Image (cartoon, rainbow, N blue to C red; front, side, top):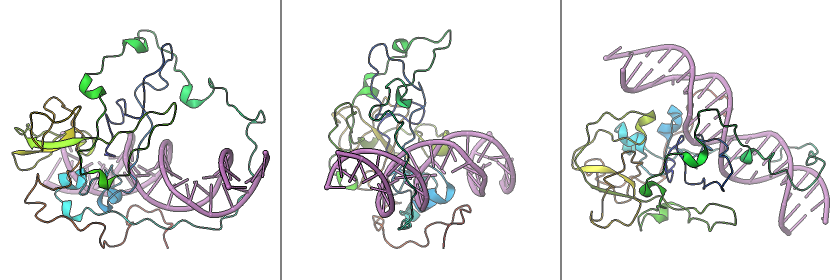
Length: 248
DNA sequence: CAAATCGGACGGTCAACTGC
DNA sequence: CAGTTGACCGTCCGATTTGG
């Protein structure tokens, strides 16, 4: 994942925040898509969702963790000429707040409950989470929220001994599901609160939709991570995915 | 039925441009 | 020089195809 803080594409993501009373949610279930800054070569090739962790979930799932390396980005073209810019809407400054796409309210179909009647979010899903200490190095520090902006949190995850679930992971690329791997250790998930009773590696026992990210120590899969993958090391040619034909 | 493929929508970045 | 704009390029959704 994008190390999506909470929820996925179809659930309420962290960067959304509660609607003021009386304001109808713009798009109830579908929020803005979040992307990782740099997908690994495997995900890139497959055009599949990657995450910030290395190895990423998808690579781990497919047992190609050691091949999980960042893809190389092309350099942007420079010196591209631009035409004259459009004026902003003539009226200048402000956009009518009601016309702003973000604020557009959807008519509530008959039979649909009002927004306030949406199912309550369990506290552990609503609580802010963050990465475990020591993992911050991989990610830019969360910015302090500007007024009107939702605060950013590091997603937090831990790994623990957990009875392996019956592996029937579905969902795209096994998102939010367990994947086949040696028993005893289990993928990380986000934690609502500080890990109290579960030790240094743990998983919240009540998160069925555990989003996962790899802990930096590579502890959970010793046979896979006998040695840490060389960070950003050499990897062959970046894009070999479906024809985009813009390479040179 | 699951996995692989891939077209194309979507999102982020950043240099060119504009106006103060 | 800060703010705006829009092209460029990467990500990944979701439909389709392929293979066991």
